Structure formats: structure tokens, C-alpha cells
Amino acid sequence: MSDILIIGGAGYIGAQMAKRLQGTAHKAVVLDNLSSGHRWAVGDAEFIEGDMGDAALLDKLFGTRQFDAVMHFASSILVEESVSDPGKYYDNNVARTVTLLNSMVRHGRMRFIFSSTAAVFGNPKTARINENHPMQPLNPYGQSKHMVEIMLRDYAAAGSLHYGVLRYFNAAGADPEGEMGECHDPETHLIPRVLQAASGRRKSITIFGEDYPTPDGTCVRDYIHIADLAEAHYLLLEYMISGGKEVEFNLGTGQGYSVREVIETARKVTGKEIPVENASRRTGDPATLVADGAKARRVLGWEPRYSDLETIIRHAWGWELSPRRA
Ligand code: UFG
Image 1 (cartoon, rainbow, N blue to C red):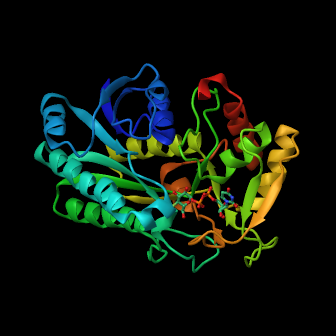
Image 2: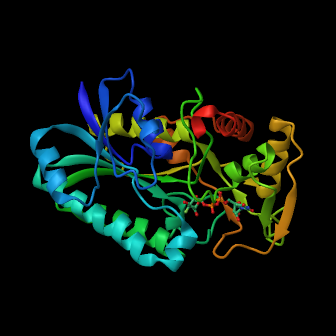
């Protein structure tokens, strides 16, 4: 058994990752400061409450235990908040990650897998975004992730660590077995908000902008199921352990859906009417964001299993209705 440190393993995607390691040759050890994650999401995995910016805690951890890899899911993720409070993003997403990386480096050349985002690319210049697309982030959130990617290249060039970066497009859905799902406060993401409108926890869903240059005028996104994201991490881990050299992968299906298509599919899945209101555009939203995920398929053998929109919404709806979600 080898231990894998999952930082942010009490969060939406990190907790799914810890679950993915069950029954494998790896054991999840979760480190989370519970600033936005939930203790219940960790389940039976080993749990350490703490912050990746706490150098003393990390030095003790890396000094006394051996980890086959460190996975980093612990970023702040709200684009609008990053615009109004950039300091939070440069502190949590950049400065604390530097503390983490430096502690890792003090304890040998370790493997590191970083959760990055489509937001590093900015406005798309091609219909599908591959790994060679220029990186011009539009907000401090995207900048903070981009900065970490740049740092990782430098650490690797210095021989200090071995890293991989996975850039998620729109993470969505819930655990296929219903044990965990999205639980953000505030919830800003489209699919959980649509389902809150279906269950009655929210009065209606507001569509932010219907005048985009897309087929129905609403924004198009590439939704990717969290179980498929966890699988990509698992495959990347195995690839790195077996000496793989590629380091950057975009994770999406290559298929985009508009806000209106999401709402229509949610109506079909839930059987609920889902009242809609219209509002102006949300600042900073690109019209279309769709991944070219061919490299992850080719190099890692990644094949999304759950990422058709209906399955994503079915799982998220099960979670919306689940008594566990309290
Ligand atoms: N939207 C609505 N109404 C809502 C919520 C969202 O119309 O109540 C729209 C948004 O304007 C956007 C689409 O639905 O067009 C998707 O919005 P989300 O907030 O669900 O997701 P984003 O595409 O804005 O953000 C996601 C991740 C970010 C990441 C970004 C990449 O959540 O972390 O993709 O640009 F940065």
C-alpha cells in the first residue's frame, strides 16, 4: 500500500478522488482545512485537519511519512470573488501552494498532481481548446492557476519535483453511488442551481445573457462528470509512476451544451417545470468553452464514462434530493 496525500480531499472533487482510491494499491490520506470542504465527505479515509500553507505541519508530515504522490484540490474557485478580492486568490492559490511545494522539495523529489482549469486560457481562439492554446487568463482566479503552472515548470526544470497538471472544463455531477456531491456556499454553478430551482430550494433559475454568438444565444460549456475527473487523476498517477513524461492535459468531452440545453435536460430528468428568469450577461463569461480532450485519451487512455449531460444531471439530481446533502 502506498499513501497518496489528497489536499482538499473534503471538497467536491477531492472527496471523489479519495473514494476512487478505495480498493486500489493506494491509500488516500486527506489534508483539508475545512474552509469550504466537509468532514462528512471524507468518509472512512484518514483525515488530517490542516492547511497547505502551514509549513511546520507539512514538514512534520513529509518528515515522518512517505507519500507516493501529492494531489492538490485545495484552491479557491469563484471567478467573481477573485475579481473583488484578488488577495484571497493570490494568498490561497499561489502563496500557500509555494509553501506546500517548498516543503515537498525539502523532503525529496516527489510526485505532484495539480488541479488546474480552463480559466487559464481566457477567451478561446479555436472551437476546441487543446494544450497548445495560448494562455491569457481573464481574471485573478485564472491568473492564480496559471502562475502555479508556470512555477511547476520551473520546479521540474530544476529537478525538484515531478508534476502533472489536469485542466478541468466544467466539473459537474455527483458520486454515481450517491455518497457525495456538490455542496458549495454560496453555490454559483449552473447545474446545482438549476436543480435547486427544480426541487424548490430556489425560486427560479436566472439565465445570464441570451445574446451570445451561440446557436441559442446562451453560453456553451463542456460539462465533465467528477467521477471521470477522478479517473483521469488515477490514470495520470499510474502514468507518472510508470515514468510517463507528458505533463499537461485538458479534461473535457469535446461536446458543449448551452445553458438552455442544460435547463431542458434538467426538466426531462426531474419531470419538474423549472421557472426561468432572464438577466444580463455575467461579467467575464466567454461565449463558448469546449475542450479538446484528445491528448488525455491518447496518452492516458482516459475515456469519460459518465459525462453525457443526462447522466451528469441524473446524478446531481439524486444528490440534490439526498438526505446526506444537509
Ligand atoms: N449561469 C447561468 N445562471 C446561473 C449560473 C450560471 O446562466 O445561475 C451560466 C453562466 O453564465 C455560464 C454557465 O452558466 O455561462 C456556466 O456557469 P458556471 O458558473 O456553472 O461555470 P463557469 O463556466 O462560469 O465556471 C467554470 C468553473 C470555474 C472555471 C471556469 C472556466 O466553475 O472554476 O469554468 O472558465 F474557472
